[in-house]
Structure formats: C-alpha cells, structure tokens
Length: 227
Image 1 (cartoon, rainbow, N blue to C red):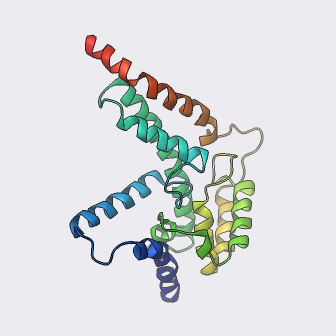
Image 2 (cartoon, helix red, strand yellow):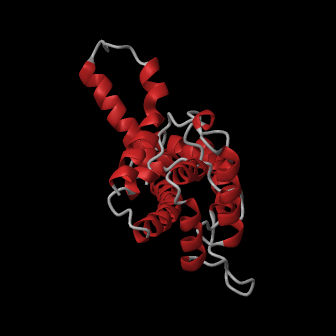
Image 3 (cartoon, rainbow, N blue to C red):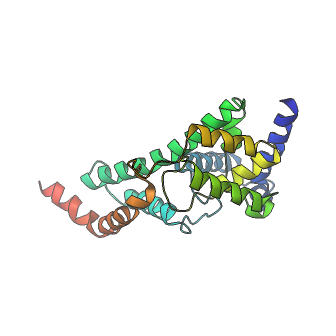
C-alpha cells in the first residue's frame, strides 16, 4: 500500500501544476490570495463540476444550468420566495452529484483505499485532459461504467471529471478491479425498474426557471414588499 500511496500522491498532485505556474511567485496580498484559493477549492468540491477544467461552466448543459442557478440566486433577494426556490434546485443538483461521488467512494473503500479515496476523487479546475496517461482506455472504461452499471443516474454522457479519475486508477493498476466491483455493487437497472431521476430530466425545467427568474426577480421582490 505504501508504493500505491506514493503513486497516488504523484498522480493527484499534478492537477494544480498549471494553475501554480500561472500565478505570480509573490502575490501582492498573500492572505487575499490564500483566501481566494481556499474559496475556489471549496466551491469546486461543493458543486462537483462535470467539466472541472471549464472555468466558464458553459460547455456541458448540466454545468451551465447549475451555474445559471447560482448566478440567478446572487441577483435575488435573500429570503424571498424566488431565492428559496433557487436554493432548492441548486441543492437538488448538488445532491445528485454527491450521490454519484459517494458510490465511487464506496467502491474505492471496498477495494481497500479507505485513506486514499477522497484524494483519488478530488479533481480541481487545474486538471487537464492533455496530462492524462491513458485517455483512450479511461474513456472506454467510463463508457462501460455508464452503460453496464448504475453508478450514474442519467443516460446523458457521464461527467468528464470521472474520466480523469479513471486515468488515475489505470495508473495505479486498479481500474479493472474497480469496474468489477461497480458491476457487482451497482448492476444496470432493468427496463422494468423505475429509472432514478437524473440531471438530464430536470435540465429543461431548471433552465426555464433560471430564465424566468432573471426577468421576474425584481417584480416578485416589489410585490412581496407591497404585501
């Protein structure tokens, strides 16, 4: 396990190298820089972006909807009905993403990686497809997990963040073991089973709500004040 942990440190540490190189060696305000980095990492872990390297959060529909909800909430008066509705939608999307991540964590822990699971699953905005060691094999495994297991809820393309994680598992030579466990713990749903609601089902509704809130926030706040 010791050699595996050393490998883990190497393959996970590289995600932030690009970001570090772009930052000034001596920030003008070290405390402000530190606080900004902590907040950025907290946001990344909270939202679990499907495309972690997309800083605009606009490349994938689910990321675009979640980002739109977050932006709409910042423009809505806290405590208003609109604010509460947006918060419910935001947490629903976050919960779905967290549930998927918990499935992956459970499998890794079952493989014996109790201490390393969180590090293996951590993907920062500095992660790059260009730095993947075995992208074709990782993509093939991701497709198999998506079609032959129920680790993902949606039938839409799986989040790219897990492609980067699978590349790590390939490097550690545990990807096939992970796939076998996933098939055992989370077999595909039968056609007769009721499909769990995925993000794709809610995306049109949520996007319509974002657009409606953008144009209705001011009117709603004024109406509540009148009441």
